[in-house]
Amino acid sequence: MKRITKKSIVIPLLPIIIAGCNFDKEIKQLDVQQSDESKLFGVSAITGISPWIQSESDNWNVMQVSQTPASMTGIDAVLINNHGQNDTADIQITGTQSRIFMLKSESAMNLKRYQAGYIEFKIRSKSAVPSSMTVSIDNEWPNRSSLVLNDVLSGGGSWETLTVPIQCLQPFDGAVAINLSQVGNPFHLDIKETFDYEITDIMYRLTTERETVVNPDSCEVGAGSGVNQAPPLESGNLALYYSGDSTQAQDYTSSYPINSFGFDVEEENHVVNVFASDNGGVFLGSEDSDKDFSEYKEDFMTLDLKVKNYGETNGIQVRMDGESEESGLFFTVDNNILPSDNEWYRCQFPISLLIPEDNLNLVKKSLYLSGPWNSMNELEFSFTNVAIKDEEENYNPASPCIKL
Image 1 (cartoon, rainbow, N blue to C red):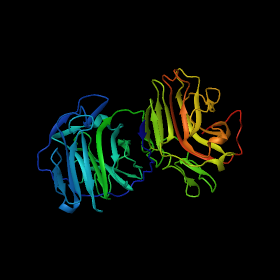
Image 2 (image 1 turned 90 degrees about the vertical axis):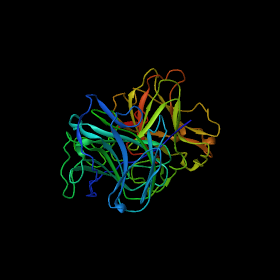
Image 3 (image 1 turned 60 degrees about the vertical axis):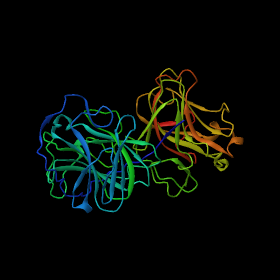
Image 4 (image 1 turned 90 degrees about the horizontal axis):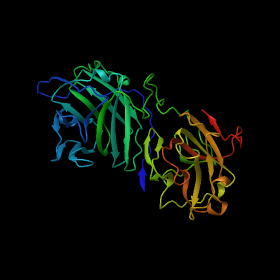
């Protein structure tokens, strides 16, 4: 069983630090190989780029990160093995001043071909997550373009991928926009809160099929996922995996984490993306999940669903599982209900069609999405905003999914 982490993305543009990086080495020109992506850090990364840390508390001095632990005031880092040799940085931060992890190139990089592309990186939280972090492209102050990411991580110990449109990075507080044809520090991550994390697979990409942290055209806050803002939940509702306001509702998110088997599952911007090449399933729940859902027996499951391809299957089976899992009760979503047009739909399903009433007193999986056995090849879909609510006024049993 694979554990998948969730996250929610809200990105305003805020002021950032103005300190330089204090590198003494002369930077020469390096033309990056003409490819759709350039991996700067991780397995099979390009050569000539090294990881460093920097601390505001140490007068903005810097220290290179290697397999031998590096330590500065408020930040410690070491290279560890993840999928390869020394391909991941393990970092511990304390305090409220700038603690920076960066990549430095031995020669100035020409990254201009990526000016309409993306910076992508993977991060794994090992402690409570910070409320904000700042991603920058830097060539020593004042040459710096940045984007502040607020509440982008949800933690839980699994890898989360962030994809940042480069054209949304802007100079702040007297900085000058970075010249992408002369980049000394192609990745610069500033965090000002106590946080332990691992980071790897930092790359520049020309294109992406991933959800971005902001809309790459408008750079608007919260516009990356393509999902309409989920309406606030009310008293009596139950949040299971919800990006909207759930403060008035009961919240079982922590009791029913995202898990899967067989499928390739990745979470981005509070959206779960699923691809199947064989039998499998994705669900909200764990061995420890044991809540009583009996009070919701007359309510409806609501979720936002997007299908890119039904593949070889005749539809997605939606169900809930109690202690006895294989009840044979599920709702099938197919092309007649939700077309495979890669667009978002908001669906409502009566709880009574997803699980026998007798199984509601101990629910192991609050949502289970799969397909008919031995016919799931090339099934591809995404989902988010899972909750249990009263029947909506626009509910139509013959057409339970409405395009957003």
